[in-house]
Image 1: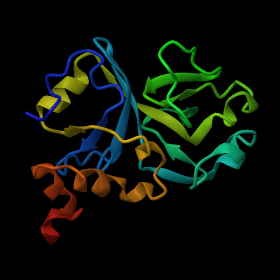
Image 2 (image 1 turned 90 degrees about the vertical axis):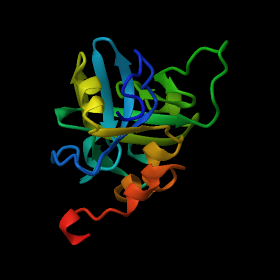
Image 3 (image 1 turned 180 degrees about the vertical axis):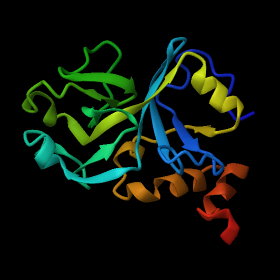
Length: 196
């Protein structure tokens, strides 16, 4: 059983789901998913390593100047591809007694979701990094837990910069490589196991 397969409600929010090498579903093969919400009703996250060719300036021109490189829209998952959500890393972690900045909702630490309907100016000066995603990954009640029990995903801790990697297509290998156990060896597996 993968680490995290028995995780309780909410315990996966802010953590990464790294696709096991055997997961071949085209939407998730070699993907790294940041879990945004997790409770008894299911889970929601975004795939961090699927940049598209669509510039943010084409999709959301008012937000484009505030995006981290590469400044393209990322494919966040197979659900609701016609909707967008954004993640932002604040320059400083908000203190527990302070209200959250306008237009931002905490996921974990200084990482949170951005209200794209809000004017960028109210949040832009407080952010260190930002990225936009089209669509998301979603799981119904018990679905993710079933996939974890089937060893489809590896659950690992996220780092603040994972969601804003300048080399997003290399994220799967780099996240696995930094693990301090047998999971690090998975980073060396070729995409086609027959070429091993």
